[in-house]
Length: 116
Image 1 (cartoon, rainbow, N blue to C red):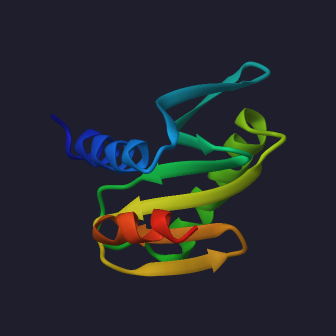
Image 2 (image 1 turned 90 degrees about the vertical axis):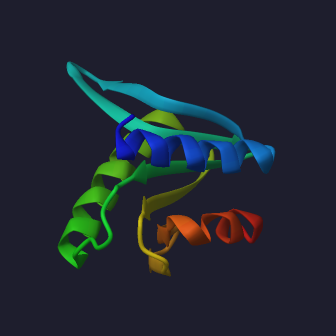
């Protein structure tokens, strides 16, 4: 099993245990273009749009590129909900990158979802 897929499965399981409705590898279409969202998790009027990266460190530039992509995908897939954009990586930090956008180390993800 690929490491990225294992991370997606682990994060999905944590979300399901916290009563989120979870879909993995969701395809979003925008005209002729197709995009993939690693994980879409919903609970009430809240949608978590999650990208899992099997990296220990993402540079600020990489974070901004990934967040811009996540926002575009999120606005297509969950237009009428409160959206929280999350990048999950192998690190251990929890960092708010911008409003409603977070960089979360996989070991801290359970604490994060219990507090949002």
